[in-house]
Image 1 (cartoon, rainbow, N blue to C red):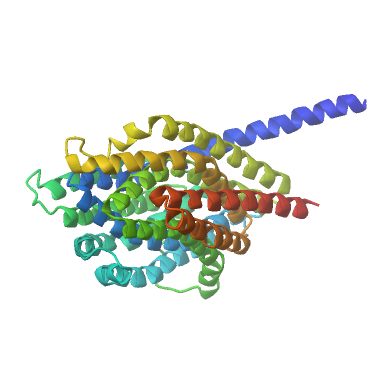
Image 2: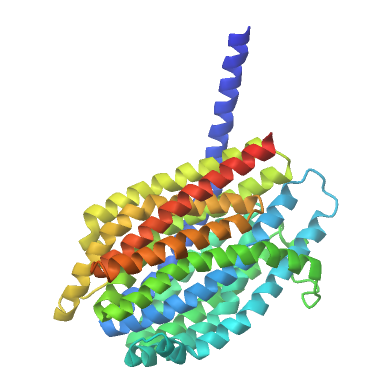
Length: 466
């Protein structure tokens, strides 16, 4: 009898895990593809500017990294909409759900507006900021018009994140993917025209890339908002209703949960930006090579990031339904899927690195050879940290589903700034390994973060379950 019950229990557990894999893929794949599409917009700009030459690529790299680090902080804050709405969706009682969700989304828009103002001020004074950090005056001057145009993408891009969090909580992500893919095509066409002066447009080079990207992000947000307002499942939430009205308790909840998320992402991306500034102390070749390798790593990172977003939703819904076992299944399923994909991308970096680098540079230009060789070496190091990067991302996403954001912030501080950055400086300069040594330090930090965040999710869910 006990053997029969054990068999039934095993089959039941197996069925639950298979169902979770299916649900995670259904939610995570569109989110991962939409993230890939999002990074493809930036990658298009990098490729097009690379055709202008290493100097334009380096200037855009400096400016883009500054904008991205601010945008990711804002993205982290407003992404608190996702776990809050997901837990409300998971509650068994229906009373008050529509009103609560509408208030959260509305205050997500408020948070985006409040954050955009200081971000745009930084963008406007980017030349002085880059000079303060000892960057090449010519590169700083070239970066300024690009970022002053790109800064107008900040508010619409953050509003798009709020809308994505809203629809993802209901596991309806197809529209996000479609809008983002259309954004890739539109961005490629308008930036190609504005950078090189085609289709009757003026040749604006770096300035054109910033203008094109700002128009693309704004257009994507308008289309996504129109979809949410017209779709029969979402329009009943009337998310723009009384948009001018503040709800201080909900806004405070978003910032209380979101500030640690945004700070964690700033610490992680910030260490890569700090690495870029260290590359600037080495030279333009190191900056351009770092930008190419980082862009390749960022592309593959979008898949576990999509799985992390799915984990936030699935864990949040399970918590809302008081299903801790389901939360554990969701977190570890997303972890396995994210790390598995990054294992495949690691092999690609290790064996096809030079071919990937060739996509970013004009091989006929003699000044691109040193950049190509160094970028290929950095991709070998990037291949090593791929699985660590995927593991820490998904584990952090699962913890966000639990609304646990302060401990991940502390872990990020230790892993990236007390371990990764000092080791990068040590290996890069005293040990004279240059750009490769700086990236070795990054590997160490990502590995520590992956282990600690995974253990944190395991311990927290185990404790709450018992």
